Image 1 (cartoon, protein in one colour):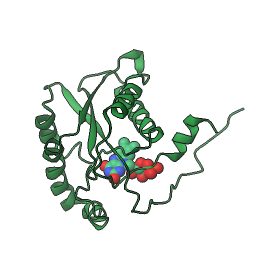
Image 2: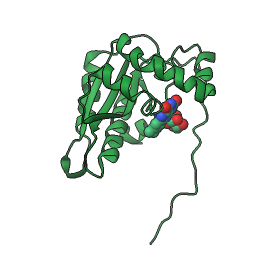
Image 3: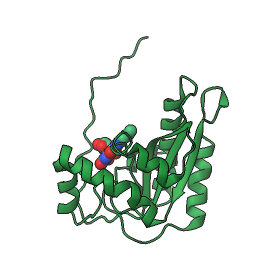
Length: 185
Ligand SMILES: Cc1cc2nc3c(=O)[nH]c(=O)nc-3n(C[C@H](O)[C@H](O)[C@H](O)COP(=O)(O)O)c2cc1C
């Protein structure tokens, strides 16, 4: 199996991280993988905020946890049952927030999705855990703008917590539909 396909198959959503910081060289390699992602008309509509400051992460995750805890308590309860304080970013030592301009190309969400997967696959290949997180995006917009000092024309679309996985919690089965491929020959 190619290294690329092995990383694609090995990547799983990580919902418990060790507090061990991620080495700067590994973060640099992950960000290089993000920047090299393809994008429509090579617009590269993204900005990557790589946040390892736990106070800044908490300015987003604490209010998000409070709101989501009321709307979807099972989300937060699952984390807490696993010994994880934040059911939003799962106590990761680093969180990469990806923003883009509010007015952008038609494909900007797709572009950011591709960069997101590059980040997660690079993390996997470097022995790190990661997960895409969207639950906070709509609920704490103002807090995210303030914590990251976003400009008025910029919005965050996704976050990717990164760190060494704490493998003490069982992974859910990697369920995938099997009815969504049509070969037309
Ligand atoms: C765009 C996107 C947003 C997601 N948002 C969340 C989230 O807010 N919280 C969470 O725990 N998982 C989130 N996930 C992770 C998915 O639940 C997970 O990838 C999916 O269940 C498949 O599991 P796997 O990644 O281990 O294969 C998100 C994934 C994607 C792609």
